[in-house]
Length: 538
Image (cartoon, rainbow, N blue to C red; front, side, top):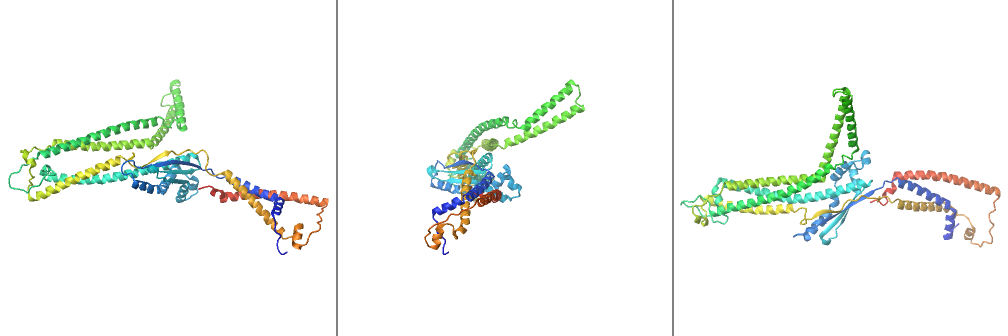
């Protein structure tokens, strides 16, 4: 035979009809095995939270701020999925327990968690506002919601801490510089008290041999009064800040006390069982003491007292655990921060009060002649003129540093309002109701299509050996190149029909056994290889 006869669509349809049982059985085997493997897949629930970054609305919130925000948004995923943070969350919430029990390296566990975290950054640039979404996938909805909220809270806390660190770092440098200059000025004034009478814009006259007036000028007195007034203004400001923060502490303390009163300890089944058991033991003890007139030293009464004491210790331990849990809440942390800020303000107020007391206790003495206030300052020696110039220059530098320090403190106090950019949670982490993976219906449809394709492939493979032989009249005409005049149909006897039916039943039984075995084998292969775990999963 020179070549195989080409087949048309009708020929392939006849092949499909003749091999229909094989195609259907193959499709059923693949589909059933796939459905069993798909049902074994764990469901994953995804929780997400939407966070916006608000740009500054005051001065300086221009193109540079937008660029800074855009640059910082590109590093959000690295901040959220840092190795140290993920290890802390895994240990705190006991995540991926099966992997860790199998001895999996912590690096592999953190890589697995990093793959379950998704950060979708949407930088629209409209109204100077950027936004991003943090989502996390877990086996249960509660864990997904908890971890998503934890990741968002840590990211916001890091952002606020970074801004506060930047602002407070600048203020600390300026405060240290001001302290150094103040120390230098105090040393000079203690060594040469006449420097206190110097006016910043007063000329320095060379020393003369004539008499000099040791008393300060009226300008020195005026400067002293202005210093006292400035310290009193600072005192009033600190008092107002302390009063405000005291009010906030009182409100926050009410919230914390309410939390302690409504603590979940009463809903704890262990606590309830201990209370019930203690009440029962107390009733037994009262019965022994009051009705049976046994003393406290009686063995039965002493045994009951020991049991009650043990229960009291367990209840005390539960209360300590509850107190420790409450101390870790956000409200308690905020209360501790407010109390720390109050202590700092009180320390500053104490320093201001002492400065006022020193100024009041050591007032400058009025000069003998008022006309000396406009006269040039007479240094005590030739080197004193240089010393006076250095003193006045150092004093001017001190004022400049104080002005910069005040600006830095104001900047630090504006952290968290609309004058600086901040992260704000717009949508809290949701509790997912339906799993996002796997899509079992889609996977089953894919498995059915794959089973049909495999069945058709097997059918064509078995038919290939028939293509090279004479099977019907068309094959005779094709290979002999002669017209076919007549065809005699195949005639079989009754015995041949019975044998054919028996062979067909045997084939069906054998095919059923092979199909069942193939189904179990294919199911195990799909479960072991975990093929469907890669479908539709990010």
